[in-house]
Image (tube, rainbow, N blue to C red; front, side, top):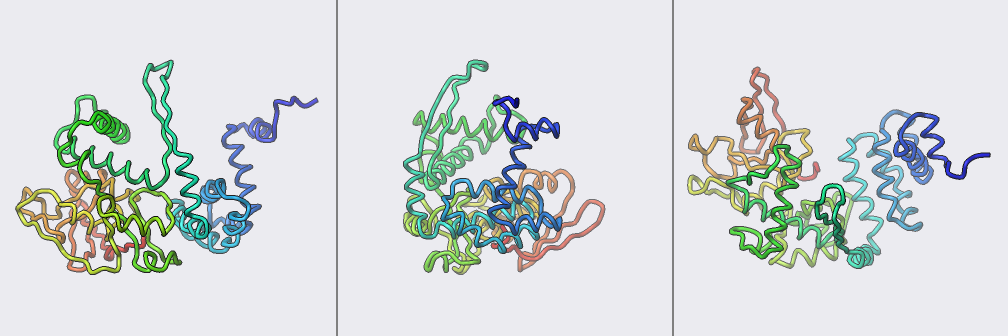
Length: 354
């Protein structure tokens, strides 16, 4: 007699000597392929991976039966994207397709998310640490995320606390925790914290006016999904959101030698152009980048828009300490000269690349 404690995933895990998580993932992938058979054909050809299917699995979970049917109807589009894109780029396509699914009831979904907002705390018995976990609707989350980032930048731009870990990920988590403490304690924070929240909404003019389309550009700096109606309202709320309309004329901003750091307007302009690290193939988002002077400031470089480039921490290190040399032409074509003399040249930034 089979023990009632056994179930299909456990049987597969034991038979294949894999973890229960891995066994469950296999069942989840099979269910997803049953809903969208085109993904199975991509796997059979070896053009996509299980990770691509996992992205769709996560996207399907919050959908009701009707919404799943709508997404399944886009199976050919998803299959083509899975065959030609990396997992991260494919995830962006899936998010866009999910927004399309929610086109009729996205506002209702946002209302449900607002009702589900919660925050709980507890004390971990082993570590003795007081723990906090919250879930917030996407609109609130974007504002909270920017408030924390602004406060981290204001508090720790010049000096890091002695308690700061050396690991880059743990470092950011530690600094965000200290920023939260500063915010909740009411501590005045120069240049952040209690000042205006600076959230940039990057959206193309056609989406803003007419609604989403196949080439919509929507980026709030955080991978959340909001209905266009909400984005329109946010774009009008200047005290919270700085709307960046892609079709608007760009204006170069020049600070010369008057300032070592890029101002907000320059960062917004760079974010429109790059969306992330300027080095090709790097997946770091813009908010995780530092603004680099192509001609270094200490070498009489100017804080002008045509001398500035967003670089993630790793590639910033490559330039300053490993001898990479970067150059931009008038159209922002980037040339990278490596220490061994090899040269790579890329085209101008593409706002639709992310």
